[in-house]
Length: 138
Image (cartoon, rainbow, N blue to C red; front, side, top):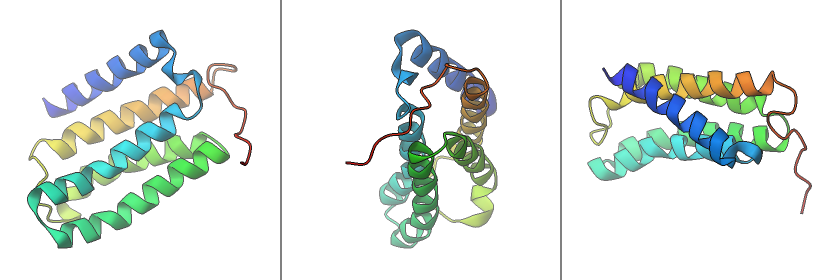
């Protein structure tokens, strides 16, 4: 059931962002990826585990870095980050003990992330669907 809810919410979020126009800015999907990356850190804090927070921070830094690089260069890196986080979710319970993670979360998040990656990839394959102009340096 967690997988179906994750897929359903990712599809709903995708169409909501399209309808409202939130994804017209190339920062939208990298920002979503950054928020997704931070959630395991939140769960570690909720669970009161400094060890889990330290270990989760390694993954957080990697996924945030991919999101930022994707924003600065190619949104395909954000697709890779979303898909990679979905795989990370799938294997999460075998990699870490994080007492704050709800039992249903890894399956839900895996389905959400992979669906979001597919949605963004589909947009990137359609010319003009997502702004491709790279941000200028300050």
